[in-house]
Length: 482
Picture 1 (cartoon, rainbow, N blue to C red):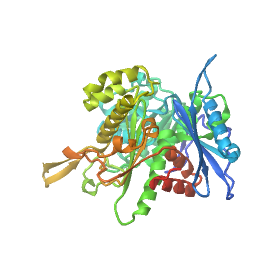
Picture 2 (cartoon, helix red, strand yellow):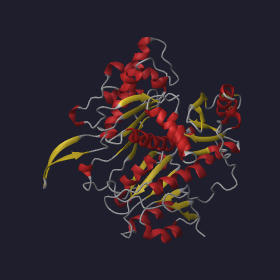
Picture 3 (cartoon, rainbow, N blue to C red):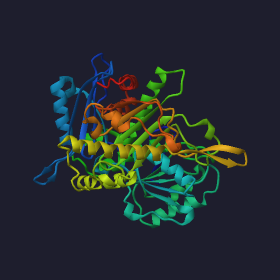
Picture 4 (tube, one colour):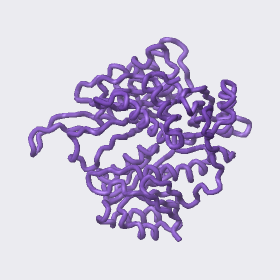
């Protein structure tokens, strides 16, 4: 039998070699005092939040290096978890017996290669879906143009797309055959022409794979939910355990998804909370996470109605982009180059050579903030794109690229430079964005900093305690994140 299960839209598909027999997290007891610990196991730091499930109140927070050098190499990632849990229990003893929900970007997170038909159609649709699923897209292959998967990209998972439902399946089938002939044996999420499923099963026999709804069932329609759920399950079944980040079964038992995917879910809940506070006007949420190596932008905004029907690959309300050349340390040099800040080139080089550097003076902190502002602004510009007037057969029309963020009402900043910065750092780094030259950036958004890693906790709680997730999100929406 082919090693595959088929997943309905929004379902929980499982691939061969999945999670059967793994330790499962404890269920939260429905009592007035029930609490949960939400853990984000990052590549550098593990962050934890203890949350009251009745009120949404933050009862405690903690962070600790994920791994530390030891006598026999790096320690188990669960040692950072142990330290956080002990710290939370000191703040409130209920943390010691609370349910634990986790997400992880340790070990490089989730690396996805997208294989589609044409670069500008199904491959682009797959790229957008992969990003919204919390992955870093390391390769995009346009099979119709003769491209093949690059082994040097070293993906954890392949997202195979191609063709509208009921359309030509030839390129999709050929791409599947090429994956096998090129030696790919990792997990595959198939989200292309549904008419080709049985043939795909034969081709990928012996390769762990799962079918999801077509990401582009017809031209102009993007349907990410089924593939996003399938990618999440593949991450849990194959990546978390396969990277051997921990020898303890509790790790695979508590992790619910890749951190970026969980944060994007948190942003969706936050956007709902913001919209319900202002039901009579258009709202939207943008999250900018400035990291050491990348700067991620998550947005939840309604697509511009002026663009409806004019795009081959439709935009969706939920969008995520990852800028791998923008960051505070490992990508500091390319950040200042992208922003044209030649005067910061030497300072950026020092930071890139010493990623663990912490500023030790006001002057150095100002440099860090300048690099952060460059990373945030450039990432937002790439995410949002521009608007310009062009002449078409219909006359003059507004052509837009990216995601229009002008009407966003809340801009959330994340990352160490913001969490540990001095008074006013959020406005200095994220405030007063330049919207000249057609950049579709937030024009009147309130700026807050997610100091307690609330969004990851909201995303983790959304599936099991939606009311608690909503109450926690509302605290961030009004700037009282605990």
